[in-house]
Picture (cartoon, rainbow over the protein chains, first blue to last red):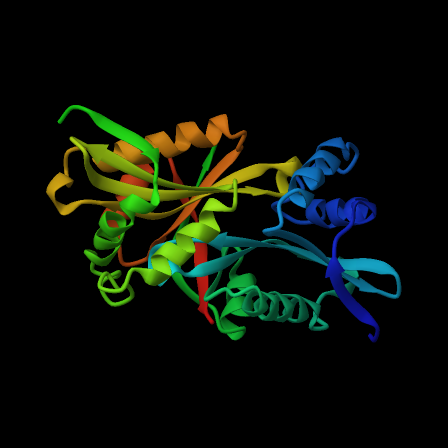
Length: 150
Length: 150
């Protein structure tokens, strides 16, 4: 359980990241692990934006977790900077050992060092376990998250 | 009711934007319309980021609405690009005349033209009227929005 490294994702990590995105009850229908082209293209768009931080957790050379941290500067709340956490996934082999908490705690610390005043994320209303998890880490489920597919 | 223009915000719009942010039941305690310095500083950070679109609605030369549209490129959902709408406000004089809908419809159309596949926003759980408003515009309140103040 040692040697966990949390670091910026690279293009070489994409197959492992996509496998984790797809190995999820909600993700399985909306990912294409057999066709990675759109993911490599998306990674290039992210790499061109200094406010996007695609991140992986690596143990013994193997990608075992991922999240994306995005920085949004804004005017509201006295010109507050917020971060948004998206696409949090932990490999099935690593569930229940605290890796999810390590990832989110890393994201909170990184948000502070990026100058953010607020960290936010949305979680599908059906993921009751995830909601308890975020509450334990100090988040408040104070908002309703609305989505519109285009 | 004519001559509504929706355009990128400029530094000259900041006093009017902040007045609207502060003239809100939740915003009143967290904004400082008497000290605009942090807002001008935040606007510079936003202006340096091509994925941030601070926006105003102007009628007869007067700023009557605002929102911020942010573009987040990501890996999940086959490398989908999403936009986030934040800080939506309509001047008290303009409530109930469809300006809020015009602003959100503008944000949806702009999201499409920016290549987004998904538009998302969070709304405080106490704002029941806002929730009905977003549902009428096609959004689904499928998520819980979690926030952590740093």
